[in-house]
Image 1 (tube, one colour):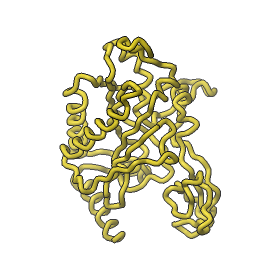
Image 2 (cartoon, one colour):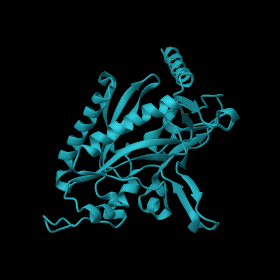
Image 3 (cartoon, helix red, strand yellow):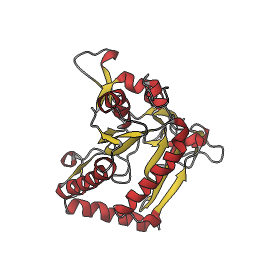
Image 4 (cartoon, one colour):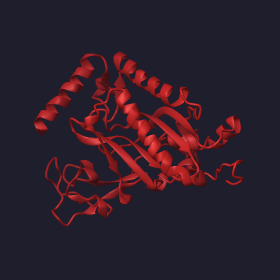
Length: 304
């Protein structure tokens, strides 16, 4: 079965290149892992998806405001959002061939135990069989520097998600449009993650685009709107022609949720390389707004 799936993926990758959809990044220089360039038909397909998403979730609604924020932001954004401390994966390195792996991709590690070695069997490298070292935390954000200064004040990051750009513009949106609760902000844009082991063609890459909505509600109503948006997402999948028999809802356990989430549901899809996340829905509470010291004055209730 695995060989059949590998053959299918090889055919898909080959077809995408021959028909001008997707090419390997920096291909004439041997390629750069986790990067891809979109050809003529790939761009057209991607634009169709983005335009339809924007029409459904922004243009056809009165309660969602579009925004397009900068990829580079001050380092304080990511410090206060918790990404500098928490946006990381446990990683191990083979002591023989020096290949690196994420521990959640190796059955020999107990990911639920903080990435520590499992007592069930001795971990070994899936490439060469060599000994694997101890798990270490690896922050997936790309760090860069802004301007000519070389000190720590010049540090910035390529954004690993589009959400923070919306949160830091929360006050600007409220001041400009005076929206009543509930309301949302939507953005389509590039995000970057320094994946330890990019894999599965364009599924797990280092540079990609996100289509994301942050929807702000009164705390007591979050459950109702969580279910509402879950329904909207399922409807979206059907509208764009996704085979719903291959879609599965996964209630993410407490230990596996992101640091900002109180509840997360992942929608997983049966890809040729296995069942993986297609997209997710998370209730972030007021974690982000509170950490950025932002609030909303509810004029109807007279409180924040």
